Image (cartoon, rainbow, N blue to C red; front, side):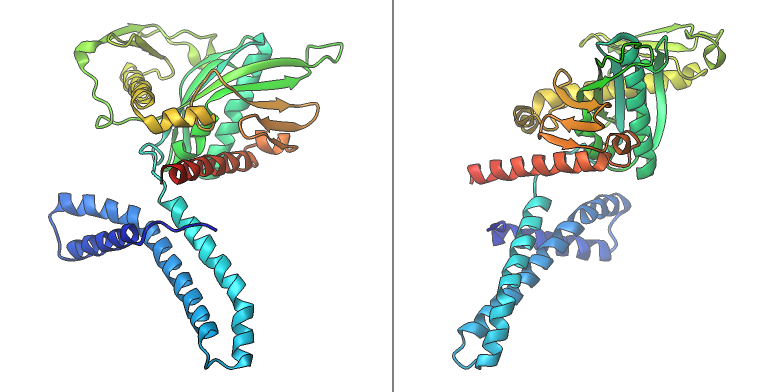
Length: 362
């Protein structure tokens, strides 16, 4: 049976909610109003879960009191006995919901994300697969109402991408996509294969939380900025101006290159955003002990050398190796429609690991 968090913690949350509400009603200064409104928004769901749990608990206690009361007649006693199992289940579910909503939040979960996909082993087929993965995420983003903007791209010789970097903008993007980081493997018969043999190739996906100035400070003196002509095969890539931007962060050696926009100013802004995201991700990886624990469980680890998923086209299946989940819904996953089934399972596994860690520490 799920055990609810200590009542002292729940009462403290309810008291804080009441204090914030009263302060906002009193009309504080604008800065305080914004900060408290944000905190209130974060607490509303938690308070709703606490009140739901208390209501279920009160109902169960009332039924139990009726059953224990010698004055309760036999007909009522039989009705109560029938209702008790369901009431206990409702309390247990409410307690579990409460434990989940009170799990430590990743500070980056609500952020937009930088999506990086690179072709790995497999030559042209790997580049084609990288293109397939990008389209999968773009369609998924469209279903979620998110906006996808390409930051930089390097096309494969036979199609797809050697590398593509994009911004995925929207609320809660990182929370959903962060479990996608790692090596994705594909097994299929290439169009150029005359013998019908299955080839295996791979692409690497990296998902970084988009960082703001407040998340990571960058000193201009630490940057080496080079401008150059954008390169490309022609068409939209033809560019006679020095618009491509390469920025090197000298202390870490991190290099970013952006040439997608014709405007040097826009490319510089996007390159800085990409650099900030990479530095922020590196800082989170180094400092956050919770993410270190996540790496051990291989769910949401962000370890880009880890093979996380296989897409087998001949069998129409997708297997996530971290949680041993196989779906025979390859087309639906690649269209973005069934990707939530994989992500939901990964989120559930991650939460279960967090709860187990809490129970061990208790």
